[in-house]
Length: 262
Length: 272
Image 1: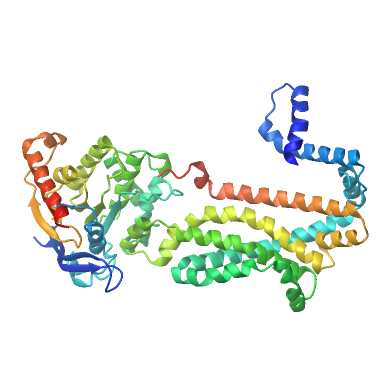
Image 2: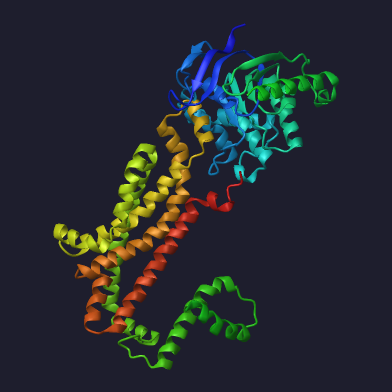
């Protein structure tokens, strides 16, 4: 199968020739339909990786190829979600979710004529993440966890082939976070979308991903790639099994070592 | 002055009317009434000559006596102020959006704007008179010049404080600068914009009256200046009263528009 994302020997430096080297010699591949997680010590260039794949930054050295296309400008087949849900407070939740459709070239000209169809799609997504009937509420009337669910809907509304998540559950409490893990697990299973999740949480990575990339300290590169052997569908109970803990333990050791080297 | 009024009048009224009254709603009227009462008593008690500080009763007498010129000049001042303010809204919004558009323009134009704003507008009026003659036009322009700055600053601030994540999400979808401005920047800066209108409208009155005082044959500024030269102090105060009423009315109008247009920004403190 073709790789949806392939990054080859990429260097990315901020602020001119003397600036900080954020990633160096970065090479990674994500297959179509995969759920990949990227973990590493803080400041290892995980967010840079996000921006490289979405085309917000163009690397100085190396190539980034997404869906067979050389990335030289923002790629609209990607949906993004950050730790901060960044819902626009003057729009209802439903209008917030429809926002990407007003931007993406392929949808923006169809939106007005096919409004009903799109609204139905948004409501279907809301139902999938457990927010049925909340579309008319304003985002500031929702709790943090609910806003983050809506944020996922917004990232998915334009049917992206690739979903990039930058610590989307970082600011939530432990129970809400586990709930949203299950939401994202089910979305992945139902929509067949490729997901790249950048996270600090090793248990989150081990529970959700098929593949885990461990990054080094800055300048970031991939130290190790793990294939997660657990069968799907996975239940939250898996986190109390020995093989799960062994994997988390191993990841923890690798990151501790990467931090020590830096 | 207002605090003394509160102490002197409020307890008396409480004692008289034990029935349930919405004090918050009544407060503006009671305080204004108290201020006038205090003023009246002060003038009578000290026996201040009318040419120094006329009592409110004497001022209202002047209002009745000169109602026709007062009305005409008030209308003129309201007209120049509103026109200047309207221009400031259009110009301020345009310049604010222009400045907020890019960091370079912001950096380049901001110092110029501050320098411009620091110039006392009374020094600009003579130049306007050389260009346009005396009368309505310099008053409108002065009102414009003095009131557009807060609008520009507020709109530009609203645009400059877009969250980087929001911008990333949209840019990754292929949004152009114009898309981001239309979908996020402009709606975002609207609370700042409508908030600045309240400041701008009161400043616009300062500008128009200033110009009318120095260089016009119409308007409250001119009327007060000529009343002063004839030692008709009650009429001067009647003019001030008319200005205060117009100012409060326009301010309330702006506050109402602000609430109507940007309710989302007031309903909560943007719970994120």
